[in-house]
Length: 258
Image (cartoon, rainbow, N blue to C red; front, top):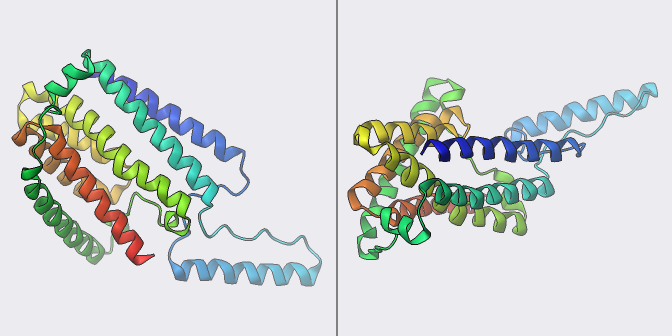
């Protein structure tokens, strides 16, 4: 487990270094839209005023503000993310020191029970309802960093190719690679400590790597649910199904509101 965790950290920094190196070659690198509609309008208004002032005084014209995410930057970042997910699966298989067949038996991938996935779907509905309630409560506090933000950039919905790459990384790459690592390797590797210590450590790691302060608490709760599903059912397919259904719901909501 420690070998896998170390390799994960190394891969994480390598992948981010690749994205940073790419960003340095771009003058207008942007993978996120700027704020909400009012903040974007304010940025445009400020640019218009600055441009008029520059034109009136003969000064150099200011550069237009970067308001919307650049689709090329999004596509590159998403492809790198998917590559990291493929590498993570390889890290898990290497760190487990088992053959693919042996790993499949160890985490229950040789046991598929689709008839039990009704419980998984029900849990996704309950978890999403709890996440909505948490978001409302966090917004009511007025503390912005408590409010969870989507880990999927809203800009992906404006381009079909970007959206397709997002679906590949979110619906296939993330459920398989993250469940392999956080539930299959980390949780299973720490299970000798007992269910709760192992679940809390692996869940905390899962929530922290998403790098959104507002999502730490809800994602820890989601991780605990997925861990329980895997531990109770004895098959990683059940937590993968939960992860897929949860992410699919997020994508659907993004498409509905775009």
